[in-house]
Every structure is written in structure tokens, then in C-alpha cells.
Image (cartoon, rainbow, N blue to C red; front, side):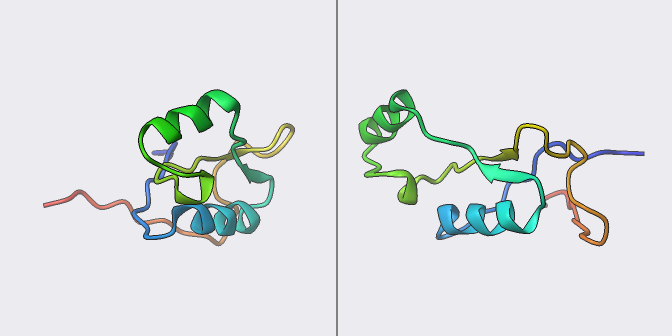
Length: 80
């Protein structure tokens, strides 16, 4: 059986979408930003985490490592 490791979603508001999915998927959280990451974003002209186009949602410590809980289905389609 195939297993998804990462899912990439294009969004006009990635930080808000990441917070939504982190809350929807029990045991997940938005990855924290450290000073090095904030400096990298500023160097790219990104003012702060709310404007970051690459927000990461990851399992919380002790959280699940199985991906989405039962009942949530994802469809992976190959682009044309």
C-alpha cells in the first residue's frame, strides 16, 4: 500500500491554511520559526510568517506519525 509523506497545497493564504490543517489533523502543529528562518524570509522580502509561502505542518512531539486520521481522504493526481 502506498503512503503519502508530504502534501503540497497551493494557497493565497498559506499560514491560515496551515493553521486550519494543523487543527483539523489531531496531533499536528505549524512548525515554529526560529531566528535563522525569520532572517531567511526577510532576505527574500517576506515580512513575517503570515506571508511565508512555505508553511510547514508537522506532527507534535508524541503525536501520530500515520498522516491523516481515518475518514479524511486525499487524492493525488499526476499533472498533465
